[in-house]
Amino acid sequence: MDLPIVCTLTTDQLQERRINVLEPIRNAAIKTEELPMGYAYTFQPQPDLLVRLAKLVDLERGCCRFLTFAIIANEETIRLEITGPPVAKMVIADFFGDLK
Image 1 (cartoon, rainbow, N blue to C red):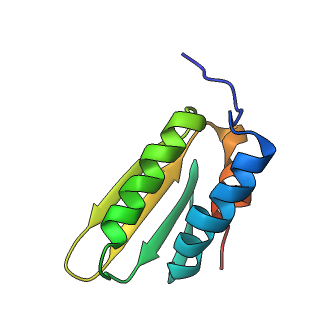
Image 2 (cartoon, one colour; image 1 turned 60 degrees about the horizontal axis):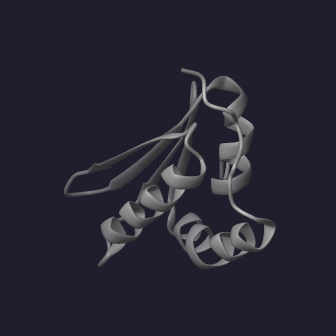
């Protein structure tokens, strides 16, 4: 089933989400990698980062149902992969960031 490429947040909700949730996570990324269907963001492990990433995924999957999220953690890094249909790649870059 193809889901529409649409965010269900209001303008105010989106602004609040960008300031309070997306920006702190985006600023913590140490590496951004382009994937065929999206982007991957790498982070150094830090206290509560996994909790913040899980909260972000939970929030975003409610309003941007067309995106797919994966959190991959090991001893050295934490990686967040965000993918979607080809037309969603610009949305991912806009909301989460493109190559640094």
